[in-house]
Structure formats: structure tokens, C-alpha cells
Image (cartoon, rainbow, N blue to C red; front, side, top):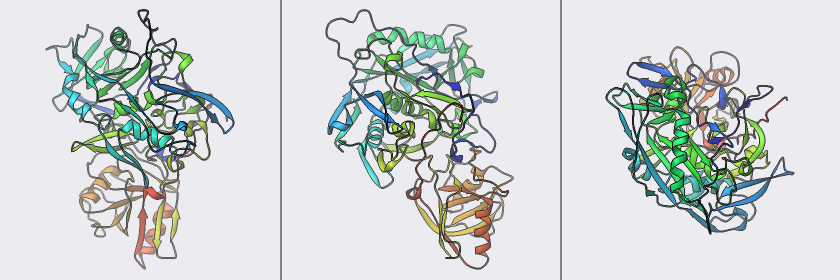
Length: 526
């Protein structure tokens, strides 16, 4: 959640209506796998907005600031709001902006017995080879956004249908130079290293201590550069204590004139196996924190002083207890689940966060973003189940919910077979191979049911609720093999089961049918 907004509890705790955002089945906190046993933590991206250090007193002469533009975008179609966004104005056509970027590895020696050390140098290669800097092909449904970097694809999708936009518009991070590794001996009381069950370590640094440390480092960089301070599995929390963990990253800027203000990013590289036991545990790995912060820095770079903040109509953050956001942060509304997707560069699979587009905050209808969507990959959108046959039940069933660990990221069409409860070890009532399976909710984790069916050859899964009510989403509870999946209501499940008694049932689960995510819910009394 960037370096940012004053999170508040709305006067009335409004929640977004999309079931895919907020409802969970069991575990609703990420778990750190400590050697001494699992511990629940709160994963976030969170520092106060408007508290950045003043501009360097030593700056003199001609100073080249960050490349950004200022333009008005209208909220509710008629209320212009000014925004400062990295790059050139996309309404002016083709342009390419390249931001000089520096990766700064931080090596922390902790005061615990044996002085455990976590060195950001160890994740430099993985970060450099990730989609943050290398190119991949990005699709938005059937629209090809191009072979480019993650951040550039995001910005292109955001402004795709804006009048004047050109498909030759780009905002790129330059091939990063690498700063010298900075070795820091963490004082007692300012941080701790914790042994993990997989034999590794994670670190937790006191938030204020770390923020002050970065304040001493930014003098080494120019306003037109983007320094990215990277750590290997080191997070933030008050007093360096596990119970206060974990801030995974933030972006920041100096206060003062935005024309010459420096900006920067801190993001932990999240080692696999550190977090588990929830959707967050499944999704917050490798460069997910960095993807979150790069996206937010691009769209709201000057958060260190109130003059440069991109204010929006205050909006409820879905699934976060009524918390409210007043500025344009792209990752925060999709953080609670979170909604992530995979991308391969240099034969390595990385994970990136989906992001909301500006029109979601502005309540712009239709959205000027690609496909009229309100998010980059539309992962939080409701995906209907299409029944193709028999004719007696054919049609679109829209009361569904998606699952972050088994996203509908490709189309599947097949006969639907009912296999029963579907827990690991259960005997199936029908052969799942090559089919979309219908599985009853209950007894074991939904993710384990889908993992077992996928391992048995299923190409898609429907989780049928066994009590009346709307479709809800579920948290991750184990498993590693997944297929496109939807949760459907008890009524829809019974409709399919009744039809199967006399004929085959054929269905489609497809992202092409997704209903775009609606605009934000405003904070405050309804």
C-alpha cells in the first residue's frame, strides 16, 4: 500500500459487493513458517503518507527531476482532479520514457545469536531477470498489450482507450545499474532474524529505524533516478518483532517541490516457503512486493509531501475491514486476497500482482482502460459459468466466485461430471480425466479438492455449495496443482446434478466472459 494514505475506518464500515474480494472459508491471515511453529502475521505495504524528508539542501544549479506529467482526469464524469503520473501524457500520442534505475542491495547482520545475515545481493540476479525489467507478452483478454515490462504493460492497459493514446506509448525502467552492497549491523532492539521451518531465515526490522536508514541513503541519487532498495526476505514491523510483522514494501518521495523531489522504492524479495497457509501465503512470493510498489510508484510517485499526492474520491479497500484510501494507489484494493498471476522470463516463473486502473477510483463509465476493465488482468472480475447443453438448462449463471489460488486464466469447455465430496483419498463418482468436475463443498479445504481433481486429470472445477446463499470465495489450504475453478451456488449445483440424471451437461469457464469489476465503493455513510 505504498508510502501513503491515511488509512481510516469509514464512518460506516462499507465493503465492496464482489464476493471474490472479501469472503473467506477459514484462514484469513498469512502464516510465517517459523522453525518453532507457524505464526499468524499481517502482511501489508504501509507507511504514513505525507511524511517524506525535505529536499536536499545541497541541490543547486540545474536539477533534472523525475519524468512525469500532470493532467486532469474527471471523477464521476464531471469533477476534474489533477494527477501526477510518471512518463509522458498518454493523450499526446506516441512516446517512450525510460527512467534511470538503480538496484541497491542491502545486507543486514542481525544481533541474534550467531549473527544471522540476510544479503540482498543474493537476490539481485533474480530481480534483474524478472518481468519488472525483462519483457514478456501481456494479454488483456483478447487484446495484446505488447511484449514489454510489467509496469509498461500496466500503463498501456490503463490508458488504452484514452483519446489520443498511441500503441507506441511506453514508460520503461532502464536496465538497472547495481549499487554497491550496503552492509548494516542491526542494533539490538532494532531488528531480529527468525529461523524458518525450511532451514532459512527471515528478518524483521523496526520500521522507523529502517525509514531513517533510507533517509541517509537517498542523498546518493538524483531526482531523475529511481533507486530500488532490495532485501532478501527482510520485512518491517515495529521494534523488529514478529507480532508486528510484516510490511513487505513501500514507495516514497521527498517533500517540497515535486519538480525536483527524489523518489524511491523499498521492496523485499519474498523467498518461497516463508509465508503459507492462506491466499496471501500462496501469492506473496518472489517479486510480488516489487510489482506492487513499481505499479504504485508509476501512478502516484510523490507521496512524501501532500502537494504532490494524487487525491481520489475516498474509497473502501475491499476485504480490509472498511479501511479507506484517499489517494491513487493501484495495488491496495487487490491486496487482501491478493490477486496475482504468473509470468515467465528467462525460463523462470515469477509472480506479479494485478492492479486497479485509474477509472476504478474515478467511477468513470465506461472505463477508458483496455476492454473497459477496471483492473490490469481483470482477475477480481466475476466470471459466469456458461452451460452450453442441454438446452433445458443452457445459459449464463452469474452467481459465482473466483479463487485466487485457482484463477480462471484460460478458457476450458467440456462435459461436467459430478464426482462427490472430492477430498484427497475419496473415491470419485465419475472419471474426472479431461472433464470439468463438480465437487461438493465440505470436510476438507477447497484447494485440496481442486488439487486432487487436477492431479487426476480434470481440466476445470466447480465447487458446489451445500447450503443456500450467494457464492463465496475461499482461502488456500494446501495443494500445488490447480485448474480454472469457480464456486457456484447450491441452486446451480443442484440444477446441474438434476440434469446429469438424464443427459450429459456441457459447460464453459472462460475469462472472456468475465464481467468487469465495478467501480470503487465510497467511504463514509451511505
